[in-house]
Every structure is written in structure tokens, then in C-alpha cells.
Image (cartoon, rainbow, N blue to C red; front, side, top):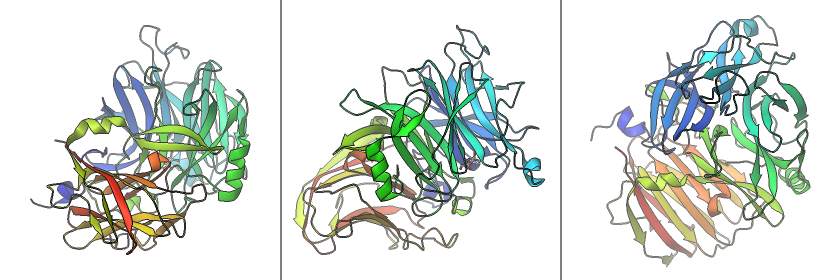
Length: 499
Ligand code: FRU
């Protein structure tokens, strides 16, 4: 086959725009059988520029179809990140009860004002759609929230608060999160400023705030996802979160979570370098009940120089988030949406082994490692380092795993093909100490799509998402424990098929 940018680097089942620059997912909502996803988009170049909202739709959160651009910049500014909701009760009055409006809320970024040295260049605005999100009308009274005199004031995330029967919205400032309430999506009242002195510092962006049922209980806790850049765990962009209670006016940290924060400084949704600006879908029916999430699969440290020219950036797999309580500790777990499995063309179960050698996954089988899901289990982990390697025919490698001596997850892109485009991409090995786990066994679920790995450890308690750009396709995956004897069981390889 001829290796070109498309065949080598265009993922099969992670959304990429056909051409040009993309960053954050925006305006995620579900309606009438369709998952909508908008995204920060610059249609005229492959680096960041005047922001539009691009648009894509999917019936299954896995196969995406790009649509027409939804929002164009105008005299009030570039269209920065934001969210969208289905206004079922027509509280805004933009539609009717028979045909409820979809309402998007986004940030205007006024470039000339910023260049002129003003601080109040970001404001919040709304637009509505009366045709299920395909075409949009901007509200004539924009902006709906003026800037209070702070330079970082953006990324409104609206949700329906079914406990208090009105709209909630949260946006990010440099190191605080503002929470607002509204009855009509137009008039907003500030309820709370949250976060001073808490968590990882940097510039907070793209928050999301929602209640979740603790798995297997009737207990509800509120989760605040708080993306930030810089300030990520291994530099650049990252997603931290907070867990607590919300009485309709005030969000307070859960005491046990507060203790975890003291020890760990920040709790991360993903320990890899390439999951950012992640937020969740609105209007998921109760009959489904899932909390569905997607992130931008890149990092501001190098996103604009990665070696794809026609398009830049992909989204992560859509994921299901779960809130789990274990040993009095609350954590948000993430896993690929189950719909991924509808794209499996064959499954191979491999015999368990006990060895101190390197094990080749799927040895002797006809497997395409560029689009595959691999699961296995290491039942009794010892004082050893467990190393998973993705490799190709020219000895390029992507290495990651779990070090049970140091109690660290790690990833190493220093042999991962072309690193010349950025000294931040491969040079530093990313090491992640874990504080919250003693693993007796390691369950691994790994999803590969040409230029990315997403690994989910122990049912999604910890995950790592990273991208890489090898000069030849992947030809295999191996597991070893640095010469220590280990067991590998429940090995299952699911070939993914897309056309
Ligand atoms: C996050 C972000 C947002 C902003 C958008 C601009 O990646 O910086 O805060 O709205 O990107 O494209």
C-alpha cells in the first residue's frame, strides 16, 4: 500500500475534520436519534485562527459525518468554546413547544479589543437553531453576559438542572469557576465563584458541572470537570476534576475528596498528554442514563505542529463516565462507549501464559494493529515494571505501562518515530505517580487507531490517552515485565473494521 498522510495518519474511528484546524469539542447534545458535536474550527488553515464552530453528527458516537459550518465569527468576535442544550419547554421563547429550539451558548473573543490592551474582550452569547442544530441564528441581544473586567472569562457549559428545574451554567476564569443560574437562557445570575486555591493551577478552561449517581447506590454527588492549560500533569493541557455536593446555590467539596486533593494536589480524568477540553453531552434521555464524554485528542504544547498538514487534530473516543465509590474514595471512571463493539469484525482469544519473556499479542495471527481493541489481565502483580510496547517494522516504539515498584503509570514516546516537530513531544518521558491505588491485579483495555492509544486500567479507574506519529504502520504489541515472571490471562483481541 502507498503510505501517505491519509493512509498513515488519518484515524478510522476518531473524528477528524476533512481539512484544516480543529480544537475543542463544543455544543454536545443528543436529539431525535442523533449525537451532535460542534468543534472549534478554523476552515482556512491548519493552525489556530479565527474560530468558527464546525459540526459533525453521529448515530452511534463512533462513526461521524462532518456537516456544514454552524457558526461564523462576526463583529463581536471569534466564536470560542461553549455548549448547547435542547430547550424542550421553550423557556427562551426562540421556538415553540412543538418545535423546541436548540440553544447554544459560547464565548465571543474580541481580537481587536485584546490587541488594544483591553481586558474585557471575552463575553458570553447565545444562538438558536429551529432545525435540530443544522442552521443557527445569533440572538440579537448578544452578549447575554458582559465581561466583569477579567481577561479569562470563557467556555460556558449549560445544563438543565432537573433537581431545581432551571438552567445552570458554569464558565472558567483564570483560576476560578463561576456558576450561574437562569430560567430562560438569556438572563443569568451569578451563584458562586468556586475553586480559589484548589487543584492544579494554570489557566482554567472548558468546565463542566453535573450530578452523577454513585454506581450501585442512590447517592448523588456533583462533579466539576475543570480543564486547564498550561498546568497539566505532564505539562500543557489536562483535565482535572472535583467532587462534592451542590445545594442549588453552592458547590462544596466532599470532605474525603478534599483530603485526596491535599495529598495529590489534583485528581485527573486522564493521565496521558492528549485528552483536553473534554465535556459531556446534554439531553441524553433518562432511558439511556449514561454520562457521555469526548475530548480533544491533543495538547496545546504541540498541537499546531504535529506532522499532519491537511487536517490537524482528532477527538478522543466518546467515553462513558461513571462515578465510583471505593474505600470511601470517589473517582470518575471512564471507558469507551459500548457502541465501539458494534464495529468488531473478529475476536481472537489467546491462551494464558506464565513467563519471564516478552509476550507477543496475537502472535502468528492475521491482525491489523492499526485499528484494534486489546484486552488482557495480569492477575498477580509483583514488585515489577509491566511494559506494553507498540511497534512497527522499522523499530519505532511507543512504550507505556505500570511500574509497581515506583507505583507509577508511565508512557515514553522517545522512540516513537518523528519527534523533530516539537521538543515537548517526545523528549520528556511522562511519568505519573499514583497515590490512590494499590493494584493487586492489572486489567488492561487498549484501543489503537493508527496514531493514538487509549488505555483503560482496572475498569477505567485510570486512563491514559496519547498520540504518536510513526513512519510505518504498527505491526505488533508486546508485554513484558523486565525479566520478571508474570502471568498474562484473559487475552482478547478485537479487530475493528471501518470502511
Ligand atoms: C481551549 C480553548 C478555550 C477557548 C478555545 C479557543 O482549548 O483555549 O478556552 O474557548 O480553546 O479556540
